[in-house]
Image 1 (cartoon, one colour):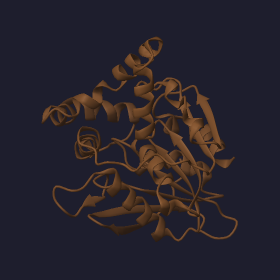
Image 2: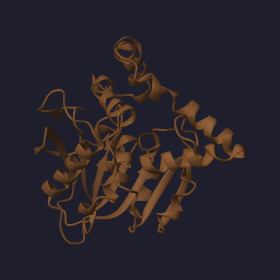
Image 3: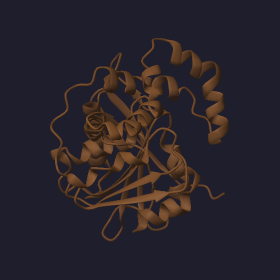
Length: 278
């Protein structure tokens, strides 16, 4: 397999030191830039297969979110709120020198991406967005309320609650940490074909901060840039039905359904690259 020639730097964000990696061409006129944001319990290496596909033609930026990989928090216990994660994303965007980027998010990286699109700082900086397996938190809340109000839609709501049951389990003190350390990490690494170190334990704060005691988010805003939502039909965590209603506030929406699981971007890099080229 071809070795990627990556350029690493450390970017300082409020409360965090972020490992940022650049691949492919240098930024400049005629060279598209992709900013790739990973989810839990991964780090930027999730995107290395698709980066290999695109390195000849694109400027590619990937970073390890706070407390993943070599990135760290500089204040204890650390702020893992969505607002802090957005500050990190825009700090990286400022640091890499690209005028505008195609933002790509997977899992928690996709949740951050949706929030970034609705942040005033995105104006003129994010030209397109591709989301995989990570919904907008405000949209999920509205989707669940609408299903709860309609008895015929209760099976959809129940199905998603079952898929999301792990989120409730992550709120239990110490138990998820023990399970990851003694069983789940090894199993995950066998399935993924790469190590994740202590990312699973370090990243639990994402769920405990933003799900258990979320800070108030601003009202949902209409997203005007083109958005492509990739829906892996075999994702065990997210119902394909969650995309319903997105077109009410994302007018330039494309939904692409793919035959794969939650980690489709890593398992199908050539197909993923084709979507990102168009």
